[in-house]
Length: 238
Image 1: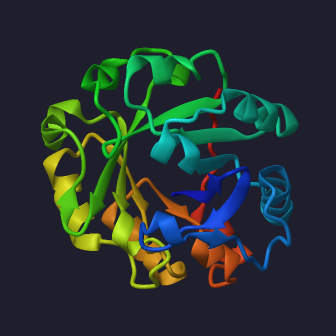
Image 2: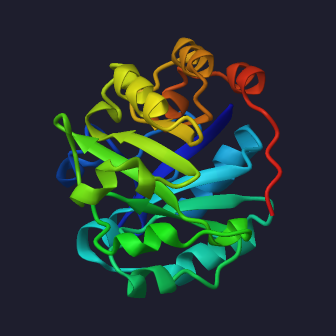
């Protein structure tokens, strides 16, 4: 399965996401890095394990619509073997176009912020241009446009983002994932929120989940390098 580390950025620093309560996110504390500067945190993560993909949530973009496309061009230049999945709070086409000329950047369309659902139709043979839908769930409710509940709008790769479970040490939302996977089996599903340990990852793997997005379990040392090596598979992307 794909194991993808996550960092959340606000005001230029990396913060610790917990329970989707963004107003109270604090600067990151981690066993893997002593920094909160994004480039430093990424460098320390990759020095610890050679991840090929990284998920970034840009909270300034998600909450305020403030975009930093040059930041991600700089990061990708600094780390030429890395691919980034970026949630930049895309709402409309003009937001999407801010990032459209950046290679190795895969845009995540979060249901929480997406207004122009026609962006979900931007697919084709060029994998670099295919967006990734994140179904964002909080307090038991799927956030966003009503139409996104319909599987016809789901992309080839989708994230099941359980915001309440993030950093809460209560495990992934296995039941929701099961329902989503039954609803559209052709989708490669990625679990986000709540992964605590190797046991959680093994259960997700047994379910047939394509991958998992992880933050707290890495930074607290609950997920070992050997566990990642055992569960990961090589990814070949442009």
